[in-house]
Length: 323
Image (cartoon, rainbow, N blue to C red; front, side, top):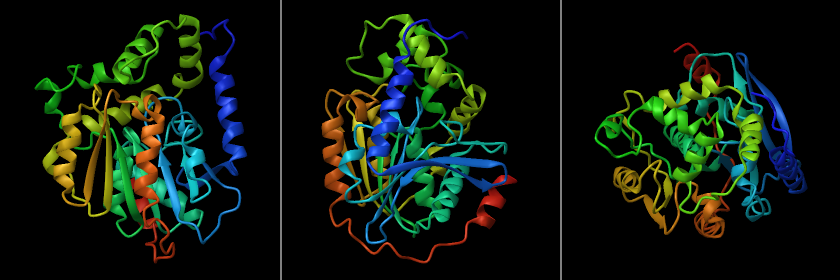
């Protein structure tokens, strides 16, 4: 694909987010966590042990900065905030073949261990919520509170065959979630927003694809296959952490039924909030309401002891690497 002749709005917007993250007293670093795996993460310039820790996990599309740039200011004064790029997004990658959310979670936990973080609250958007849920399952002592936004962890592969989604199979879903043409990007916008911007020049869309969607396409396709192919709701472990589930009322990518299914599965420790007139990208479409729910949940009794005995993760990482 050749770069668009238009001014690169995408690169300029990315620069703006980098500036705003840096201005929020965060710095971007890449850590080699071993076994040919590098995780890039925005971390506090000066971590304060007296503050609780907050881990923000992005979904598909762009990188961590784009999905949390509007919300960062609400939390940096009250939390040590960590915003990583998941594997095959931004500056994170691995040569290992594991594409499961469980492996992503182990890599993140190793990253947090390197930074001395032993307890944290976690916010996961869409695919990031799959990883966040796995973190809560594998590391129940380390994960305090959990926020899952439009996260279809209760999905089953047969849901596609039974008509729950507007797509019929995993391949069709991957073509939309990993747009490589302006037409597919427009389709993704229609699925993600209740009121998508309709008049966007193709050169701007091509520029976004070139800057944000052209790398690790096959690896990202494998991530989608790993979370959907053969998935059964009956295999999903239960978690006990206090959990806030946020869902766009008109989500077409992961329909609201999956939010109700997830709330029933977790039980009394979970609360479901439905955002009206919002789609899958509720964090971008209704940023003020999204931030309001996050603050209400995370800041309620959020100042807790941030010291706890953390399990050593090397064995888990090694075991997961050879699966």
